[in-house]
Amino acid sequence: MSSKPFHIQPVDASALGRVVTVGLESPTNPLTTNADLPPEALRELVALVGEAKRKIYDAHDSESDLGCSPEDATAALLQSWLAENAAERARVEGLGGEIPLDGRDLRWGLSLLSWLRGLKKHELLRPTKGPEQLPERARIALLGDWGSGRYSAPRIGQTVASGAYDVAIHLGDVYYAGTECEVRDNFLRYWPVRDGMLSRALNSNHEMYSGGYGYFNLTLPRFGQEGSYFALRNDHFLLIGLDTAYEDHDVDPEQLGWLKATIAAAGPRKVVLLSHHQLYKPGESPAKSLASKVSPLLDAGKVFAWYWGHEHVAAIFEYDPTFRVYGRCIGHGGFPYFRYSGDAPKSEGPLKSQWRLISGKNKTPNAVQLDDPNPDVVPAGDPEKYGAQGFASLELDGPTLVERVHRPDGSVIYEKQFA
Image (cartoon, rainbow, N blue to C red; front, top):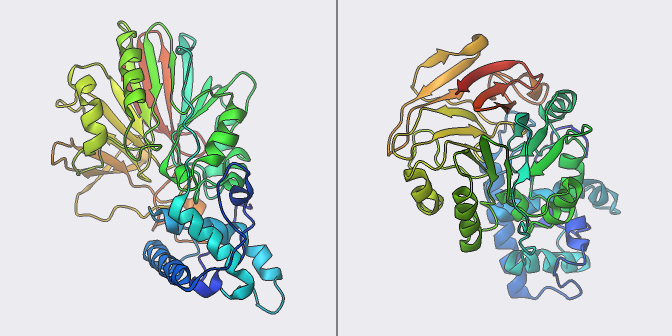
């Protein structure tokens, strides 16, 4: 898929046709296809598509051609199909790019309905080995919500590939629904590759919208990654990547047991958590399920810092005296997002970059949120309307950790050292 933004065309049931996506053709993706759609199923399908259409349009900015992706599985799957099959639909004779939901195309309707009714998730792959070794001096790039293949994402990939990073970690989200086609075209195609650099990826809700097949079948084998959660360590730090998507915004009992055991074996090392889903959003309460599972470790001071994505912003939280952790959101890697427009004053941050103060409440600490414009949305959108994209890095040097937030070209707009 090209780097041109996907323009949301008017969508209703009449726009649906046959599906030829790789995700649906996968022999491991259980679907039934060769049957006519009975009237009650047709009504259900039309209702589902109508609701998905509404959610797409609610999220879409009508003043630009920028892509959007609402947090909804049905809408994401519909968007994936539309994006992947636009050329195929345009070739259908006499339909002008629109395929009516008529008798010729009911088999695709049944396929979509079967998918939405009972999509089976890919088997969860778990690690069987202990933590992988990091050098004592290590540079780690963190890319969050980066898998769009558009806007700043390709440039970020080139910057990381040309840098002296030992590890590159994706915090999750390949758009729209993480199908195998999208993983290939929007993620792996632009992922930074450099000799000697280790790549790791976290699972996310968008990957799981299509059952996780693209993530488990393509991303993990390409990265040589055994499971959807992992650990990396040296003598001073332990980095743990969690799978908070297979169980949405949660971790299952087996992973939780692994997490506790891995931290228990960490000794005096500082523990850094990485996840797709957030512990909290700026100004909002902590995520109940995830926080409740991990809070005993946080309360005991076992975790030093936590980096996550999911929210399409860069936010730096003050030290949290309740959870005893430094929280960071690094979700601004590849998806366009509207700049925050609340009443809180702006603060001018490092290197003349603008950060907006967001007061803490509901047990969430104060935060500053990146509020620079985004020049990479031109010509599809107004750069002043959309927030800047970028990535973060961690530099480990013995007992010292330096965290940085970078623009797509690698320039540093935030830096903090922990000794």
